[in-house]
Length: 70
Image (cartoon, rainbow, N blue to C red; front, side, top):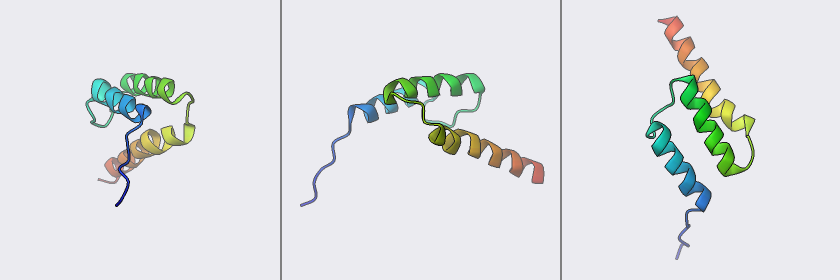
């Protein structure tokens, strides 16, 4: 039988932050993005630049490129 994975406390806190700050929708404004990253940094204990770039900076640049092409 496969083992059931239990959610960690960090996972629960990160989901709570996402729900409270931006209701699990993409973050659009800079102020919300900064608050969201600050809270996640407190939970994780470190600022992860690679995650910040992957989940926030790169998608924004892709969206801007799509808008320019149209």
